[in-house]
Length: 238
Ligand code: CA
Image 1 (cartoon, protein in one colour):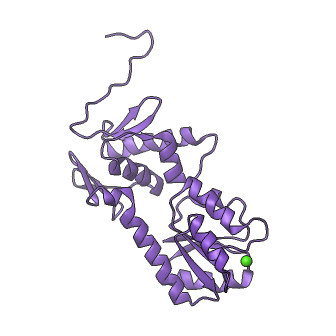
Image 2: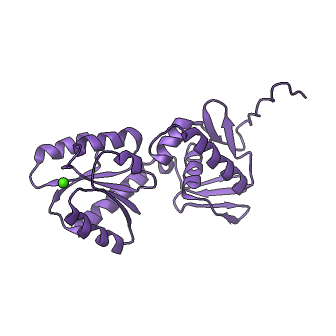
Image 3: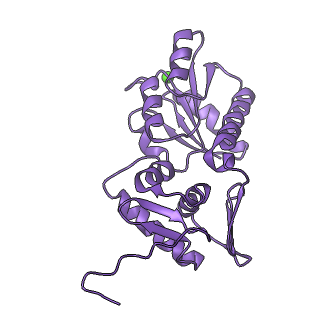
């Protein structure tokens, strides 16, 4: 599990990170709130201090929510009840008061992560396994097999495929895929997505599985989904 720790207090960060690492987690620490949304890629849970030097943690939380469904646990100084209400209204999943017990923090981290996974669209759609012809996509275990052989995908490639698999043949727009997989958008986002889809198709060896819906996005080519052929090149003919 990868944790984004947004915390300006060096002592808290220095105490917390080894504890998280001991429990098998990896961390990225930011001492400022501005730009936190640019660090959401691959993050499973955000630990967000409300009292940051450059920007209110509540605004950071809102900014995160605009681009990502990643679970956010807001951390604040003791007794700031108004902050608690604000934190939850700004889209935080849970709230913790400093000083907190690391064991309690870990329990909350696991809880929000589990809850988010359970309520995520892929799980809600029923079953963690999507099977299309001889391609099997295990959304829970992050494993893909083609004709029984494991396919080694990068994290991003898998996330793109998992998103399409969870949509069960419905079109996923480019902007949605970019927002959910990368947690942000940027000028070259479409190109990056195209490159990931291209390598995904190559690795799977099933080019018809990930279908282009021109001008919109991509979808999974389920067996009962009519295949939409790419339009003929200008000047080309049958
Ligand atoms: Ca602080």
